[in-house]
Amino acid sequence: MTIDGIATIRYLTTVSFGFGAASLLRGVLEELSIARPLAVTDQGVRATGIADQVLAPACDPGRAVWFDRSPPNPTEGAVLEATEAFRAGGCDGIIAIGGGSSLDLAKGVGLLATHEGALIDYAAVNGGIDRITDRAVRTVAIPTTAGTGSEVGRAAMINVAGRKLDFISPHLFPARALCDPALTFGLPPYLTAATGMDALTHCIETYLSPLVNPPAEAIAIDGVERAAGWIQEAKATVPADPRAGT
Image 1 (cartoon, one colour):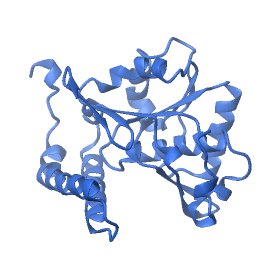
Image 2 (cartoon, rainbow, N blue to C red; image 1 turned 180 degrees about the horizontal axis):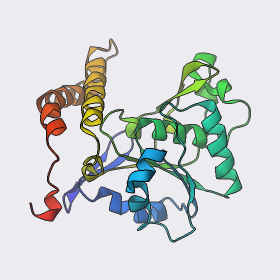
Image 3 (cartoon, helix red, strand yellow; image 1 turned 90 degrees about the vertical axis):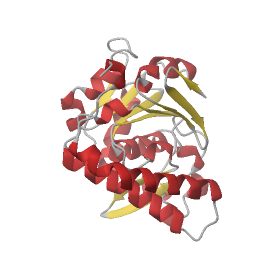
Image 4 (cartoon, rainbow, N blue to C red; image 1 turned 120 degrees about the vertical axis):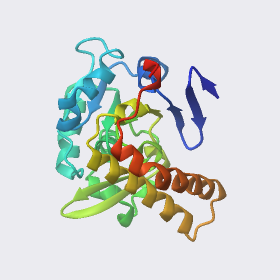
């Protein structure tokens, strides 16, 4: 379904894709009954003004609690710190704004804020998949890169005691994903190229997987064609925002 140029895709979670998708945030928070969200991002995204630009129209002043210290690779320490901010602020939902690191960290907070015990107990390698329940906090994911696909994924990769561990559960899917291409326009060229190659790699991995999943394979083929065909141009050119009539 497409309304005003924004497509709604209902597959593993509900995704709104198109220019202006981030402006749907206020309505999404109301739909999910999130009154006091924890906004998770990193210092780089916050410094550009993107995170505040996204949040300001959706949340009245003082309504959101900020955690803007997501590291380049999410760590257990950062998850614990953000979880404390969630609890201290009386939060009831999470908004993740940024790349895969912020989105994965938000999933870790959504897990740890509602599940007892140590984070490592919920790692897939330790049999944690079945321990993660539907009590995980609802998260709205707003990606600012085109790389990881964490906004539509059921997994989070977090560094715990020097090991990169996967935390996997259908309960870790973001409740909503708002994918607004305009948020990627300010990325440095090298980051556009790197995240584009990340997306390409994910598509290749999916297609070559021995598991049978025809819908995922079809998406992977389409993604390979788009990424391989457009990464160089995206890196070299700042796209024009069609909403500006240019």
